[in-house]
Image 1 (spheres, chains in turn green, orange):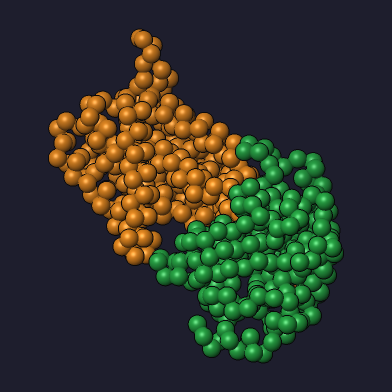
Image 2 (cartoon, rainbow over the protein chains, first blue to last red):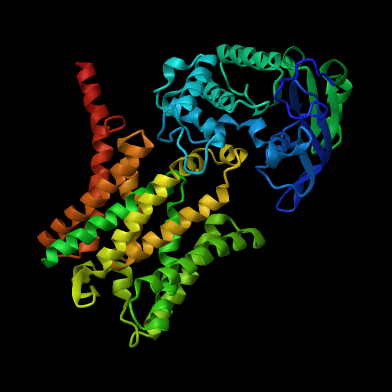
Length: 249
Length: 292
């Protein structure tokens, strides 16, 4: 395991950032993920790939506790998710929210701070400063007061990334951060992911564009309802493995 | 104080109670859940009457709340166990409960001070007939106290949980990833909706309460792009609908609650035409100026 970039606050140096054991998830009793066992390496850019309906988004949501698990467990740095929520940031698919919602860009980024606030606490000055600096990291500072219904697809994605950055997490789980964005945003996103990696963070992305996998990602997880392969891109991202998820289901 | 004053106050308070809660229903596309609850609470209210024989607002609220929660729960059961679409299961549950309420009302009309007309259209014109007394002092209409209490509760609820209500409405997946119990806030919102509906029920009735939940909130949505301002605006528009409705009703000598809903509809129409960002008339005028 790669331990070169460990941050001092990392709670358990020996444990994998994300460990999934015997995971099964079902929608109305029909399993969509079956018996997934997975240990992800720390400090790497990791892609989750597989055909449509393979359960890629479901896997992220199950790790994040958004969907109930039928069986199995998820551990974050060796401990249950409930104790470690602050260490994980989740970026949903851009299309999963209503961009006509009456709010502005800075306000959406501030939502990333809600997890650190008490029950009745409002975001304060520090939270606002963090939100501003995260906005500038994705090059969206000048859009801070813009209504979110006036953003392009790429700008929406950057706002979502800024919101995840504002969570100041160790692990970032992103559902298709490159889907439907312009070339400039794609470059900005990959630069940001590499910067996160250089800080020792672990980034897990559901990814669709098979061509960019060798250049963007260090590690791949292939799934198609069950786990097909899990390992470094160079040894795992092979035509033999790629044929397998399509063949068996 | 005059009857007119109390009717106007009741109408205003109904609008102020319904508007902001309606905003969250509109944003979460749950207006039809408000509709469902407004109908389903009827048997709860009737059973409350029958058990106590008096119009005690707390008994009524408790009965309606019980049925409101049963509605949300039964809807879930029909949806999951019956494998029926959520909209369809809502339709099954709330019509069934409303029908039970109608049967109870008609079967016990003799014992219950309640009839089908009042259930459907409310009795805002008669609010001053039912007053609230402490000792021998007349404190004014009971409906005003009940609505006032609900307005206060709604304000406290929204101010306390503003950030949770906002994030659950905008991005429920992010909310649960942050450990915010989205289910709890869903049921809390439904509970507040049920209580608001019950309080507004007596004055505007089961059908028009939906208009007061949906229309001022939808109007406010057209006029602003800030959630906090939308909440305030919906209350103001709800209040205005009440006042205008009373004027319309006096003018045409018609049902006050009906006129309130019509007034709310007129304000909505004006917003569609003249909203600064999307107003049809505004866009049209802009194009005309541009082409010159």
